[in-house]
Length: 132
Image (cartoon, rainbow, N blue to C red; front, side):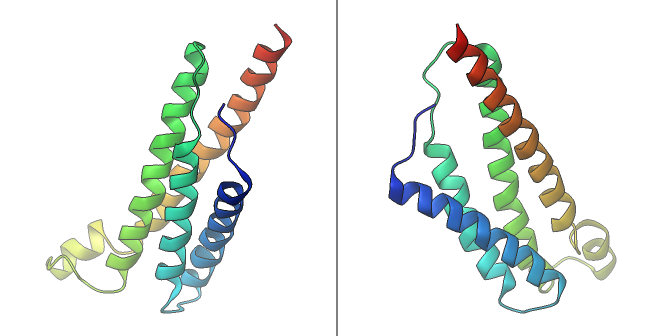
């Protein structure tokens, strides 16, 4: 995997911290929380997408695609957080409640599980590759 430099690593870590703060404070009803989460998600996802794998291991390539999918889902959760602030899509009240209201939590959970699984497996696969 391509290593990030010190500034990119700091953006990556700070983005993850902002995502956690934004998601937690959204649950508490703080109005600025979606902005904090979105800023963190942009930093986290963009720095993770900069990491590349130039090898030929199919498993690691598949896991990297899972990571990119989880990054897209993190960004989609940010959009849904903003949509949760009000009916910005102009949907009927029932449709809004069924398809938009608080659905960011589900998207965030799926993204976090994909991220956790792929990061753990990539670490194991890279260790196996290094031993060869």
